[in-house]
Length: 483
Image 1 (cartoon, rainbow, N blue to C red):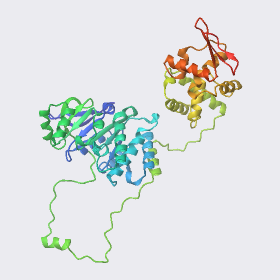
Image 2 (image 1 turned 180 degrees about the vertical axis):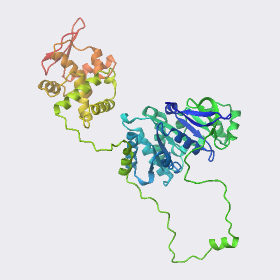
Image 3 (image 1 turned 90 degrees about the horizontal axis):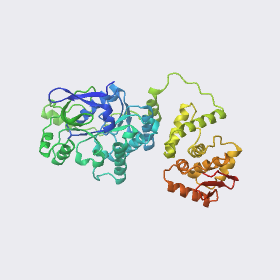
Image 4 (image 1 turned 135 degrees about the horizontal axis):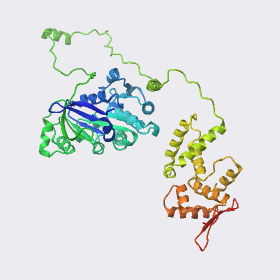
């Protein structure tokens, strides 16, 4: 299956394509003055790639809600929900891979920025097993990532700018590919714009914007004048997903249209001036009720939106509840999962939160209902598994854990490794084994670890004249062999 989509034609009439797979890795910046065809370009890109990749659109003007009719996008009206509900919806969007248009049309600018920030943060903070590839299209990006302070509060500007920076700078590893469009590059934060590797530059007139556009396209300053001469709907494209050299692209037609109607000239009304004056200044009845506003659809509850997002993945027939597992079977699965994780040589050096997420995913793959351990219990069990304590419920394990009670949790694994060696009459673990259990590669940290344990009275270390080390555990009455 090819990942290329046709977005238009070049100056010779040959098709110009965008590699969607490459776009996911390299992001896109679109620039053009009002009326240059930016929204048309974004609509063409969204329509052509709708069947390939999940799409999330931040729509400040409500231009893209019509995608729901032809392509099944779920429209979320940002004005109908609070910040917590918007975050819940954003999390479910990643979980169920739903294509969504977040319409911010009814909101004031500051509310738009706050709502979009909550939404983008929820997409960014999704669990690792929900990091599916998605195009995140932000129209009028200069509103959400302004280059300078404006009429909104500093708090709203900071949270919105941080969310946009996360999207463009760190979103790639989470599967989020930013596609941002702006009227003026000078108004868009440089930190956000600089992360894009693909560019589609439309007509612009101000010298500062032409100069920045020319720099991004690798053109000389004297060549920047051609950006001013571009016709509506034509863009200069460059980037690994488009072309290695700047190419002129005439954007092709689209299947859906904006709700805003046409901006073409229309015939003037044929009423006579006297009739027009009569209509404008007609005497109004004092008791006549004011004109009723056009009724607005009732807001959909957040729970209902979340239910609709989950519908594509819902099963048609109700599933029978899985039978409850016996505790012995659950414990056997936990031991097996921990052994699989410890087989990865990099596991001791990974953050605990990442290990716990890996643990929960593996447990679900083993058909365990829910997470069998919370994070503190997992940290303890993982350390015990590193130290060789397979069964935590035995009297022997309880004695060892009591001996370790005075140590911090991060020192539990190396202590258990020493205790296990002493119980089995084996030589003392070497520095490399202790460093691995401690999650470090520094010999100095291992020496400080042993010194700290000895100061706490948990162990007694002895080194003979031959340089061989043995470690005793007074509370257990055990000593390792010299090594």
